Image (cartoon, rainbow, N blue to C red):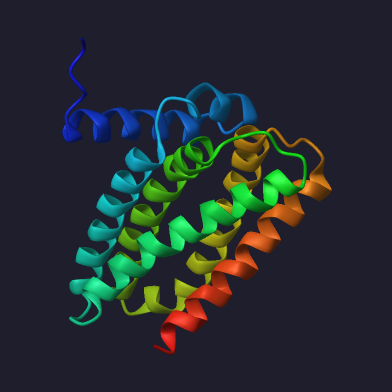
Length: 183
């Protein structure tokens, strides 16, 4: 019986897979890794990234660290569940583990990189004016990788079904976030 890998081994392995996904973005690259982890590993990876992003945010000012981390992890969970649910209704055949693991591979490193770049921009006077551009670029990159991840993890190839899945997941996550913000 093989012992299960340590948390450090799991995170190291996922980071290595993330680098490959980011360097070779394609449906085939996502398919190479989608079955190598579960929702549990995906949430661990996302939680670590959320803590890193939260710590980088503390450099700008205190406040909201726990809410930010919890919101980030919960938002990831809601979004990936909705991708799975809506993707299945569109004829997709993937499972929740594949969806969450695929999304975690790009979501975690991109969010940490954007937070780091954002911090660097805030620290420079001129850089503050570039923050909106960074936000738009981050959105574009996330949408691109999400499109590939849905195709791979849900086995959906028709563009309309992929876009409908992503749009429904986005709207559903936005609604959940707004409801939670009012509590």
